[in-house]
Amino acid sequence: MLRLYDPATGEVAAIRTGHRRELRVLAVAPVAADPADPDLALLRTWVLPDQLRRTAERRSLIPSVCEVLAPDGPGGEPLPAAAREALNIHPSARIIPAGELLAPTAGLTGGANPAFDIGTGDTGWLAGRDVVYSFAAPTGNVTAGPDGHGPRRLSELTARGTDPLAARLGFMHQRYRDSAELSWDQLATWDKILTGWRIAVAQWANSPSAAMSAPHAEAITAAFEDDLDTPAAVAQLRLLADDTDVAAGAKFETFAAADRLLGLDLARDVGRY
Image (tube, rainbow, N blue to C red; front, side, top):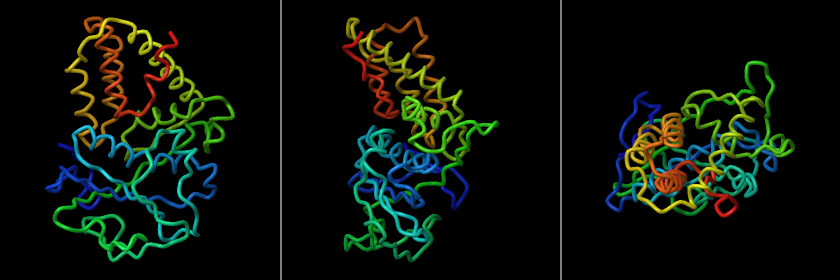
């Protein structure tokens, strides 16, 4: 069962699903100062609801994500497609039009069901007995490391030839509520890890097929369901890569299945090696 931190109570609680097994997620993020080149802290905010969507789908729930801009912003635009693609952030179900403000009747976060008109004419999109809501809990800050030597914007990653998904992997090394450091040295390490995993997955794909490793797969899924414990999921993936008792074909199947939660394009190089 999917559990998530509730900032209203300060506790982790199970998310109840509606009778149609529907899960609707409201994601509220600050307006990007430069939507064409968003800062990494903003991108981390959008990674959170994407992880929720992936986790819900894994349990055969029916998730939809409504993304809105913070009402006190100076206008702005939704996150552009190029930035979403760079970090594998799935398009949302609905996005409030640029510059259109919310009309909240309750706080944007907290225990109460806020009633919104999000430009669809569907006031109270998150309300109703058969619709279960969750709000995006606040994400931690993104810093450039202790020496301040690190990227601030997406363009800085691409200019250096760093895979933007190395940043997504970096975010997953910390719980989403904790601060994350993205120094250049750390990004180089995560980029190298990604490359190594992709090469390994491509090589494992050439091995005889086998059922995925259930203990590792279940541990990764359980980590995501437990308040998106991504550090535990990443650690489990490392254990699997080094586990000599698991057949190569089983490693391939498990990595491929896990990537539906991770969103790291781990099978991208299949056929190249």
